[in-house]
Image 1: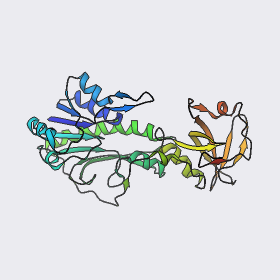
Image 2 (image 1 turned 90 degrees about the horizontal axis):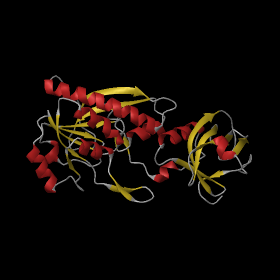
Image 3 (image 1 turned 60 degrees about the vertical axis):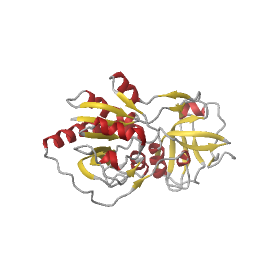
Image 4 (image 1 turned 180 degrees about the vertical axis):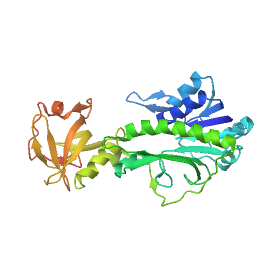
Length: 311
């Protein structure tokens, strides 16, 4: 099939890669405009754009995909199908309904659960034991289209949003190829989504703030679910500390208070249970094991983690 690929972040890269090595013809790639990033605020291109340029493909980066010149360009290319993987903009009806086989979206959840921008993060934050990939035939709603193929995978206890994203991106690429093959053969029937619909809103930096009144299990899930971005954080003696890895342990101590501190261990009370902090990143410094963090620091049992910078 002749297709146009819409995608932007690292999550979309495996899907594009597998399509470039398939029998399908990729007419063009559409991705978000280049943006400033990093401390130097330099302009960087996303992995999808770089791979497309490497393959010699046309690359479109419309500020707004709705209306304007891009829709006319899309009509001229007249693809038989469009593939959308974490593109980052809502497609207009003129694009959704033009291709013969429609627009196929690869979504990182078991729809209708976790419609929206951050399904991987919220599945981990909420302590879900499984998630998956859904390919769907897009309509004009937000992730409301009919399901084509859906496949589940377990969320492991050590998974972060980052590690789970890598696994799901590869699973998504595989399911996408199966979806296109079945559509082309005419043996895949779209079915309406069934079950309770939930929404996975985009994360904000403030979502990483640790509220110690929550249970240690909830905090452990939060730490994994916001890793790598925005990162879970708290303050101790006015210093902002990102907590990258921690374990929920049994016990009862005052929430936010250090209840055990040794050369190799830092355990903090939570609303229910306690949190053993294993890996941190102080402001302006690299990630480090808790043993390295504690060296030379005057953290004692009874010290308190706060939700603001004023200790």
